[in-house]
Image (cartoon, rainbow, N blue to C red; front, side, top):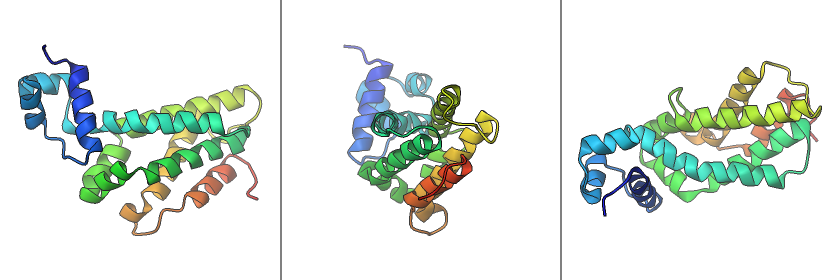
Length: 185
């Protein structure tokens, strides 16, 4: 049976979850396709890893949205907090970050990051929904606000790599709550 782009993604995801380094050449050989074909399917190693990580992180965000019963600022802060906690606790992601912190941060947080851009889209959609329902009055344009919230999350989740500080998810959630006009208890 001939390999497909989905086969490539699934194999790479399985390897990444097992703690293996993703090597495009080795992956192509294992799938029985040329490197050029695999690059055409998945883009760069960085893009492939971003897709793998997003495929894991997106369900964290979806679960958080169903679990948080608050509205407005508290809903946004609460979903961000739950997503950050799940992300921080996910062992394969921590292993990936520890193995090559600079590369991992580029995959997770750079302007070309699939993970970051999709997180911004997700937060923007939540902000827009809460505003449309009358639960939130955004203090900034939604695009800017979503980006700022995602950057706050990144700064606190990856604080150990970025600044040598301990991740402080509760402080990130409090900062998001305050940014959105909510009150910290």
